[in-house]
Image (cartoon, rainbow, N blue to C red; front, side, top):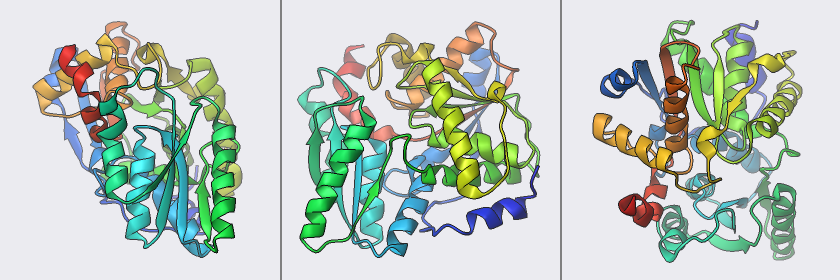
Amino acid sequence: MFSPEIVERALARFPRHLATHAPTALEALPRLGASLGLDLTVKRDDCTGVAFGGNKVRQLEFYIGAAQAKGADTILITGAVQSNFVRTAAAMARRAGMDCHVQLEERVPDIDDTHRRNGNVLLDHLFGATIHTFPEGENEDAADASLEGIAERLRGEGRTPYIIGLAASTPPLGALGYVIGAMELADQHGGDLPYDEILVASGSAQTHCGILFGLRALGLQTPVRGICVRRAADIQEARVARRLKDMAALTGLDLTIPDADVRCFHDAREKGYGQMSAATHDAILRAARQEGLLLDPVYTGKVMAGLITLQERAELAGNRVLYWHTGGQPALFAYADALLEA
């Protein structure tokens, strides 16, 4: 629908702090694929280069760029106790010479001391982030309002904070990183895509939306399916559809994506956000033992569990599948007991 040059010009209006090691590799997964009867490829966005990588590096290029443009000296962000976004924000704030305050939400019930001290939390401490807590896990607007309260106190101390808001009421600035990711994928294949379907985690929906918006902006119609990690499919699809409209307004690209293109699958979510299930555990083991590929229990393990379930039900669009790895491996160490006991 738009040339790559037009899309690039639309994105060039936004300040950007370059950090991603790109392009990330495309790798065949022949043993895992053969066991599933698929031609399976992985897009290695776990290798984006900053602080264990992951999808948040692409997103944070735009948030850190916006913060720098506003003269900020402190980044504020909220997320789950084992949030990859929080960990990466703390690292990228330090790279940009900024302080970082992080707010950890209680999204996962009955977590143990290992969960609270290891994995991403350990890295938050190593980066010197100031850590705050928030007692709820399912109220995004309240969590963002709490950040504003912290920001107000910092302003009173003479600081200039920048809030990375994650609620659906905030502009989807991070999704621009995955418009670039979609353009990168198309470029890796000479402008076309050899896949019947792309599967990716869908939580805040910025990665899911960015990929879908970027591909459709280029006129590429490959189906993109979001594997839900937090919400039921109907709720998540409504969120994605709303965010796609926000992206069109944000970028100025006159692009309407049909509702039929917004597809989510929630069966792999099972017990809920951040909770281990037998299917997720099996998916993590299969990827590790057949391909030496590490997945995490919160996002990528659930996406692989969803992929396996969809294939078993013969519900994939075809047998050529791209699995978009969004990182998150530090969380493995926070789930050591659950993984070993299972």
